[in-house]
Length: 165
Image (cartoon, rainbow, N blue to C red; front, side, top):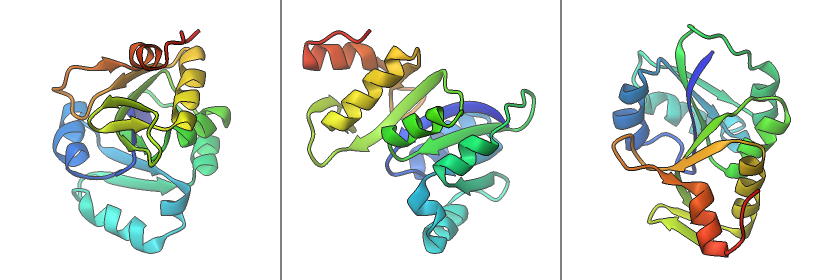
């Protein structure tokens, strides 16, 4: 698997992915990594139906995906989608290597930090992002490839007044 994009989007598969990110990255595979979706045949079926036939779809639980992931440069370009920052953190802890992370849409019920109109972070999200940033993960916030990327570190430091190591 040749990962071309790792993205957090609590909507998972929708128009921004299908119409913008897949063509931009030239992805041939879409990996949806979410425990609840992987355990729900109906949701898995709906996701598979929403994705163009020529795109391979993988739906997996977080630990299963991270444990089976093998980087293979030159293989089919793959977008990896997570529905939460905590799932990204879990996957990384299980061995899935993440150097860059894109955040597209997160709507926290108890918003503590508003990074953009589509990214509302809870305190737990902020702490998970701090951990990823401290581990050297580059994190940008943007809905579609044509948007100007916002730096997560700058936004979190500006909103909380605390620096991220």
